[in-house]
Image (cartoon, rainbow, N blue to C red):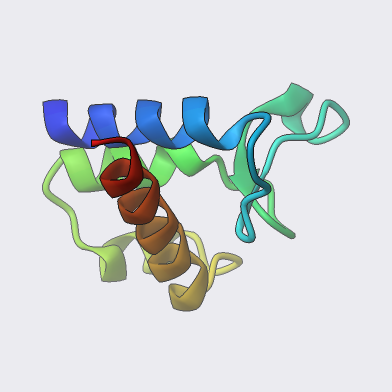
Length: 87
């Protein structure tokens, strides 16, 4: 759980102001700026909560069909790249 939360923090603090995510958007007009998967109203935090609880990506996608597997994988890849760049 701690590692997942750490990755998320790295993702946000590195992404804000330095690069635009291809899959996550934070817009004040969408859920008051809560970071969501682009084109949806599904908070990125929901994916993190699912993974931390031991659920699979497939479980998440089943519960949130507006998010694509490609978006989830891209988010994880972006997060990994940012984490490795700051390590």
